[in-house]
Image 1 (spheres, helix red, strand yellow):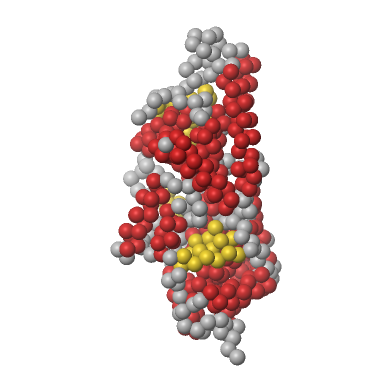
Image 2 (cartoon, rainbow, N blue to C red):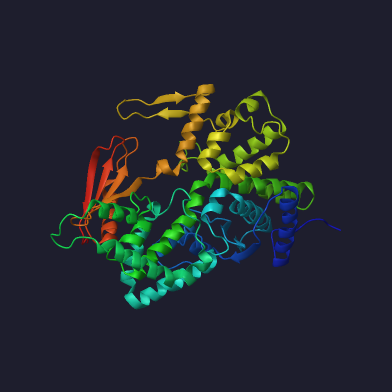
Length: 506
């Protein structure tokens, strides 16, 4: 009797189920993966485009920007200028993996290994997802969010709701907490707690603004000002949270919309922190599983060659002069580092014992990798485990680009000091705190005109783009209801530039 899972390119649901069951035995039994229950759904090309537009979530509230992205992706796809992903996977429990109906059976097998087990394991075990996401509650919360925003559109008008959503989306990058100082949100109970939360927020809001002066009132007592700053939680890095709790003129429904967008921003935050690790893990898992299936005689040589062709395309790293170059390919770097760690665990050399001392020669590559997948994010992963072998493989070096000098300086080459500098520079490039503007609410003129003061901590002399700063500041002024000033300050506290927006921005 044939041991093949399938023959040819065609597939049906029984074949997909059979492939899933065999892959599960390898993933859980041989690789020791721990995953959420799987739910696999087959979708069309148009549904895949729609999922692209709405950040990959199955049920999302409507917004004009999603339609704009849909049209853009569709035009590129129809003209043959871009392809579609083979899959989309949702960090939920059960873990939902969408596979394209136009895929061959080999591609369906690859996608199940990659998404339903590789990404699934990473979602369930990496500490950033444990800290910040609620997989059991996300789908119910999306249903609530969609229905709530639809009810607001019916009651207050589409334009009024879109103004709030536009402002909230403009601040999504500054709408997250960068460290888990609060427990992760329990999304399953959000709808039930909405009324209680609104009443409590309004009570705090009334207490906060009760002591503010009216007209030419005298300066409030210092202890009152200290109390108000404490209630405002200043300085505050999470701008969406600040406006949700403290903006004096927002209605309760507007605050709830800010909360919805804020929770969505926080939900996707771990994916920004772990792009290399997440894709590297899923690619390593699918590569290992597909090789085991071929070794066991479960797929044909032709299917294996089809898999290798697709896999090679995924992990290709374009050179810097290539028109397709857009930085480091996270699939390529992540997979290369995972393979390198596996090799160092089994066949270390003297260089590995110096650069990877905690795993070199341990003899248990899957145990070491599972521990790394659980406890690191991109910048710490690169800082700890990028080896000289991978640096040489990708021909990495570090350039010093000094605006005051007419030429570039090659600051790090392939020697011991150079390896450390390359590793530090690449790790820093994955640090979201370094790449994103650091903007925080610094003060409110409580005794005067209630002007809001924001500070942008300038790094390496990089000021905000003037047009973008003006645009976002208008959204902030709309939410706050009074004048807003954004100060760009250096490490010594000197104000390098100021941006201002009035209380009635157009």
